[in-house]
Length: 478
Ligand SMILES: *Cc1c(COP(=O)(O)O)cnc(C)c1O
Picture (cartoon, rainbow, N blue to C red):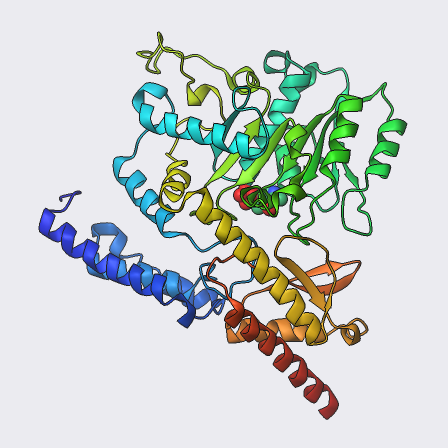
């Protein structure tokens, strides 16, 4: 058994893989956006007997590609108006291939100094973009926004309770409270569970009419908190909520946090992409005063999944939180002033996550990204304008390309929205989701794909109009 295969075989296999991937990449729009969720058919497709002795590479590759092509929501599709999942850009795909082949181990600096330095450079660059001081900043690449938010919570805890690494939560005299809006991402609940604090310590603040965290109510909560028992730990503002793409009032939140001495974290997993556009950046105003930021490059920067960034202005907090020393990790860099990633993050063995961003920047530049971000924001505005022209009502208000909409006459009909949604998904011509606003179900369409143009948006509107008309006919017939 040759794990490597020989050169001729490898070239043949690669050629086959390349051809299949190229077909998918260049012709994504011809596929159905989403699969039939036929669990028996899916399980029936899986190869099990072949696991014992293996099978022909051609068979294995065709099988895997067919499975992924038939049974997946195609997030790279230009009519996937979905949940912040992008089409992978070409540079990001190359980066994943290169990373998998070289497989650098980023746990310790000396094992992969080039890769670690690339990530450090990017951390400083992104810090600068978000308005942090390059020379007084720190951060780490994470697998996603959930890990970045968990990192933020751990940093906030260690900042407030420096003894916590030894004493643990049981050593605390007060119960720390985390404040965020009711629209904040649910990964915060997970973070609190993982840390062992319990979700009761999340104080979920209602939103204003604009769907922003209500800062007046936040202050009221802070004033009436029983400080004998509780201590405010952290306020999380969201820049781009999952439901409506709303950006909280970051200036106001930062003011409150400074007055009450609370760690201010901004979850900009999606909306952080706005920082790359000079037109949109002002809407993130206040983020530069935060203690930490979560930013998912695998959302608006359209690199393959597993790419997020945690940033903080406290340049010693990661080391204080995660610091550890072992007899077996390499120390041949002791004399150099370098940071060891494994002592500054949740992960130990580390993949070269940052290459997807580095290579993307080398191929497109910040300038290229600015164009793409602006294009997607422009498509969001186009979608809103065209929906209004066609008699639809826009139910959310954001500069980010997330559009929640319905029609006036739908509000009193429990079934029509779901009917339209079911039919569109059944056709597999577009993918969008439903999101309730004030109890009213709305369609939610996000421009997550840099290839989405006016053409795809017109097609979506036509589908919506057609299904709405077909519902009226169905109802009138009964
Ligand atoms: C996507 C998202 C997350 C979770 O990030 P993952 O990358 O999925 O782990 C957290 N917060 C917000 C606001 C998000 O949009």
